[in-house]
Image (cartoon, rainbow, N blue to C red; front, side, top):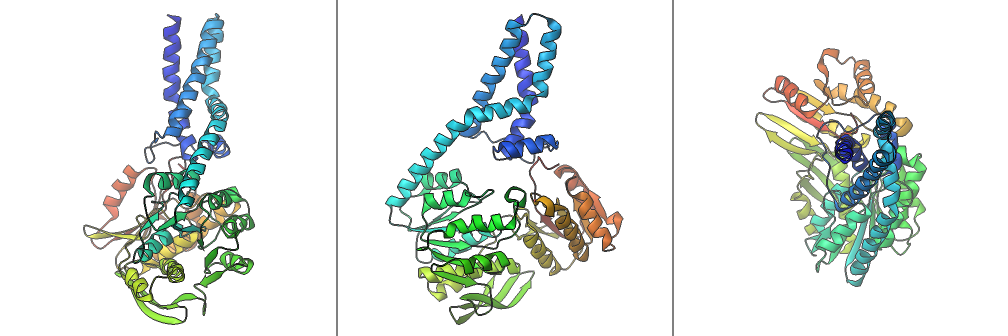
Length: 470
């Protein structure tokens, strides 16, 4: 009978652990992020992001089951006082996050060995091949620039690019080991949350060419200072034999351009290697003149927003440097398709949806609002605001509320994290309080939208946070 009770406790404990394990995965298996979210009670309620049973998580769960089973076994086997057994079980349940962290540190050495094995294997396979290797990093625009560049290079080469937003060590390894098969170009998107992250990726890939996109205060919470962000992105430029293209539409990018002493090209500044002028944006797309190494061409694209045009210009610069003909670059621009969830315009019955859910920064959000201005009809903005901005977060969300108020007819705020700041910003610009709504999940959001949307309405989805931001 005692073993039956022990098994029941184990099953109940596993069910209780679901939210914490889900949060652990959403936090990228980072113990500090997990602990901070747990202490602030940012638990992943709802089903926006479900647990993904990756090989890593399965390995972790096996350790987790063994540790928890061992704890219950010790209690039921060695303690015979019912009151003490009950108290010990309560303690285990209350200290579940601590148990999870213990399991993390048990698993960590093995995970590091596995990661190093795959990185070494992927690097060895990649560097054996005669292939043009390109690395892309920055705070904003990495994925869009990567996809645009891929379209241009495919005019001459077979190209493999990391899919979606795969930009970590294991994401790059997975791409190389599963998809590299005779391609002539490999484009690696490189993301970072801490100093040294880009250096690890650059050492693995050893790119011949690099792009530094727009740099800003993305992930300032983990980087602490803008200088740390700049230094981390510059890790892609450590090898001075590397040819680097800089998107000069941010002060940080310009500083890194001046800092780099190798072969380099500057974009999106007047009289730079490549820049756009005479930009015109409407509901159907964008037209502009693009200057490439002193020659000017007229271009048109389905992509919306100046930020996308700057990404196009940056990709065009590197495509030209690599050897793509100007006519092929302009042709590729005209055929570009929006990146999923990044200023993607979707016709939905009698209304229009602007899906910018994967954008999570102020620069892109401001551009999305500018795009929204180009549309006729009643405008609805749905957003949770921005996170991971450290001390800048409150100010950024207040300013965002101010800017939304200048464009929108209705505002729907999706969670509790930034609602007061966005609300205050909007009201400070005389936005009607009765047209600001709060919803806690997608089901309620859908119900509310059904009451607000009319024929001709335009709905902007700006940013989409995981479940742990409630």
